[in-house]
Length: 616
Image (cartoon, rainbow, N blue to C red; front, side, top):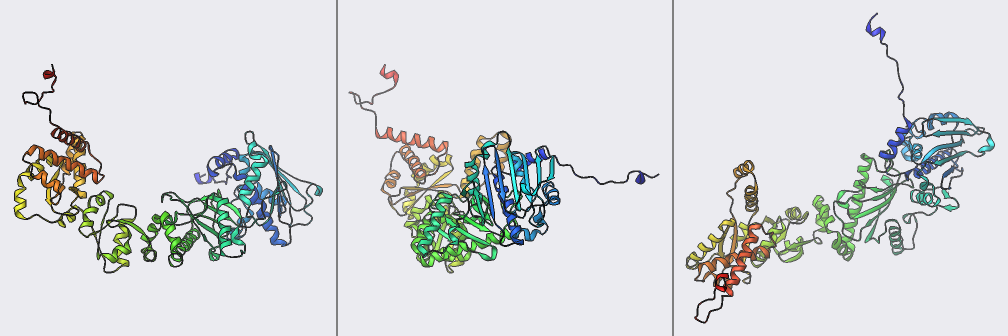
């Protein structure tokens, strides 16, 4: 007998540990036990939808009763027969709605066959009594499940459940009684089911019946805007800056996008509120809108989007991508409409959310053309739009960092150069895109060497006269990797400016790191030494103070004054001071004070010696 003949394969069935599965659901699939109310509502609504398909005049009611230790949910849905109970309730992952999944997404809320198991997160036992509407003479069936994975099924007398539909009874698990309190259940039911199309009540209090404001006819645009704003206040807790209606029947969307009234970070993903055929799916949908639209919060109802198994997020597929694009187009269209019909509203919006519009304009040429006359930028001529700047100057310069802009803005403005501070998010890239929407405009990056080239040189005689002073000044600042030059520029009140490009800053940072590193890293960093131009202290020969310092006969005093001008230029540019810079500034100002306050003369005309030995 061969090995193959003695080891015939036999099929086996997976065994499911229900307790372990419940722990998996409660700890990893569902974010909170509160979802059990949603799953019960979902089952009831789907059952009513199925019954209405058989009988359009069938009742559509869901009744919930909570006592603090138990919960009962009764629906007038299609019900289940005994074979369906065994097939659907006792088989994990099996759902009657999955026989035709495409149709299930259109008509039903549940698709995964695990919803009832969510009840085990808070319940010790689940009892279901159901009577099928498909078979007129069907008897009610009772299904009782326990947390240990066992269940029983039995047939009941017709009088125990006289009408078609289903009743679910839960007994609270120890420690979960708070989820069965009447007020808690009513709040959860109202949160999840307020937009459902059927009659849902907790006790005698109706949960449904109030349609969202976008489904009502209003007396006029003002009344409609007020109703939408009030709904935002009730739903999100803020009064919106504006409301954008999202009526997109082609993708099955109805709702509103609300513009936030305050500044938010672009990194903060929006918590959008999404209803699936009236049932709240999530209030934390983060992928519904494009990333650039972080300045709006949406509330909408859809029949096209697909939920994940936990029904707490949206499934990422082609449908969601199409919806995201369509909603982005709607927000983009709203911006274009504001630009042409409501300039004042657009200004108020941009005062708060210009960063979001800049992000959109960077990736959308049409938006850039539309928004260019409105987007504010920090420039050497004050806050202006790129459009205004391009009309004044055929060449627009920009810096890539805020520090670079602070160094050059005052000098550039005095030289008639237009400079944009590109150190803020998106600004440099938008300036570089300017020629694409304003042909004929040239954009150039500005660094220290370009600025220095625009400053006036002195005549040779003046340069020669300043040679001794420059030698002293350069010797003082050489240890700081800073050169000293003298130029004539406006404004004359500016005595000195500190200029360095990125390569010089990188080299300085490398040298600082090398000085603090061990022998191995010092050798590696030393091999990366750059011969790029050093930073420059540019002294303004038009400034009277600079001319007096250059004419000082005392070389030591001239050197100290140069160090003081160096420190002042760093502070004016709001540059961070290195420890060596801080030490130099402190020493320079201290020595200047000593020069300004000489020691008093003694009776013999000699300076008093304040040393301890003399005092003694």
